[in-house]
Image (cartoon, rainbow, N blue to C red; front, top):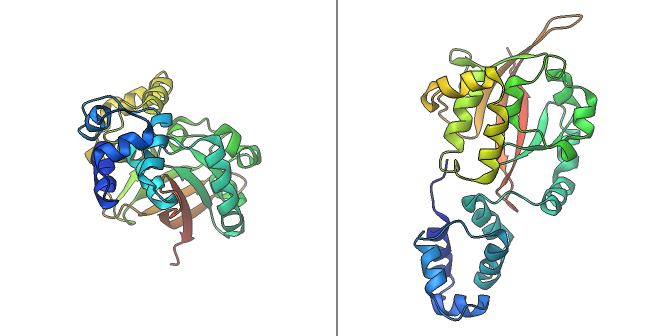
Length: 257
């Protein structure tokens, strides 16, 4: 869920760097401050990524500041940025002995380990091609049984679990509040809404249907059918990358009973 505006963040960084609107505007190549002033006040539409890159350079932001900036603005990572982050985290994810995967703020998944496929029953092709396919976690709500045969419940603890579809849709609506007009959001929902099952969930499930006390923690129960029925219970921790806060690593730890 958004807690800041892009224009407000631009102003905050500008003041932090002790730069005037005129100084930033001239660095960008604008002849006066009118355009920057309108952006800071939120009086114009969302700037293009090209314009934002010019503002980032003019403000002399480091990688961590840039990541926060792009997250608040809702700018999806480029393929080059995705590839760079994958190289940074793939060893950690591949060697994690339980499910682990890499996502961005829009819930696109770029990397998952073999344990993720094993627990959820995903085909191995999904693991090897995740960076190309970029499946969105919201899509798994209506995934065919051959793609995801597992049944899932999630919540704060064993006593407060919700079925996967309800929890996933409600959580998405909460986390993406304020991004409804972004192109990627409208494209994703327009695609999924064509499915009758998803359309029903989307219309009926409200954000308040699923509550989490902690943004970076979740409890999940996974039941996988096959030759032998298996039940997995996990504590799930989500951590944003310091280098680029648009990305998150999701790590599973088994519940010991």
